[in-house]
Image 1 (tube, rainbow, N blue to C red):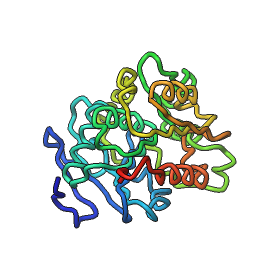
Image 2: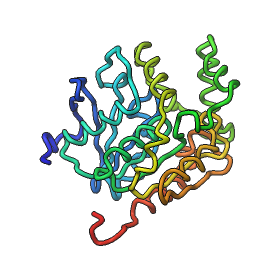
Image 3: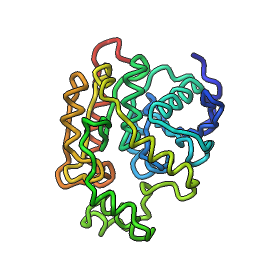
Length: 274
């Protein structure tokens, strides 16, 4: 397919329902799509996306409801977010890409890889889960900490779930993984429902792309017990656990995680793997 505006690093595509979807491109090389977590925009990746630019053009997007994308007040779903990504890829004329999704972005990536296997060369799933009744969910103490009426206390609880105190002592922020501050309340609620209702269990065996699953061992936001569940359902999936890390392993373990992902993406299955 021919790209419509390949000379523009940033721009907008249109979803199937007409919603504007903002995207951002940096670097050169094979396309690598980076999908952010729930209620976050593309700035989720600001701290590490440059690590991939020696080999890849990174493509991010603002989920509907965030950033420069449209914010319709209607039901959202991880399947719908997957359709939005395909609309962006079609708009840019990208037939095939590597895909790295973290947290809710990993849930969306599951649908993309299962429903559009021809579009995904290699798949990385980080700090995510299959959703549904088979998944291991966060405990009630975590849910209560995030639902506190005191917004500052809830924010501090989220920071603690993302990063260890030892790492935070040397990295005081600001953190770009705590949600889009300009997101309207209706969109924030709809993101939460979309993530909570995710259930790709039956679709996971349809994933044919080589898959790498990454997770922090001390992740309480999305427990690491989901790693073997995903690995058992996705054919040939590999896993790596970062000891001591929490939900934001990709920043806290940046050097190690970046090297592991880069090595995985550099592999080729054969002469036709382009």
